[in-house]
Length: 83
Image (tube, rainbow, N blue to C red):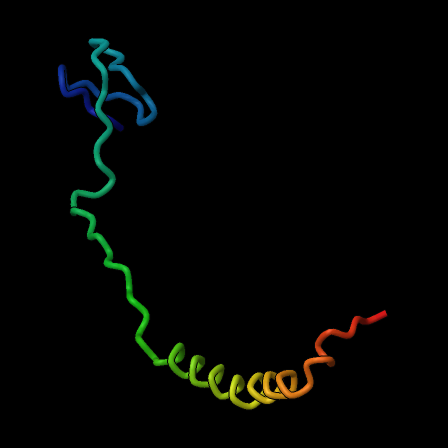
């Protein structure tokens, strides 16, 4: 039930206007307590990115440098085409 703020008459919960005086009804707030705003949680820094970069540098030394050295020593090998 909703009570009219203008005349105090009882009205149905889904009514928009007062059945007695015709004034627009104001729906009561669901909760009288203010809502709290939640702060977003920042992920903890785990150092995973740094560990990933170290792994990439390690692979670069193990894989890319020997390949680069090979192609510098054998320049004709890099020019061959696959068929």
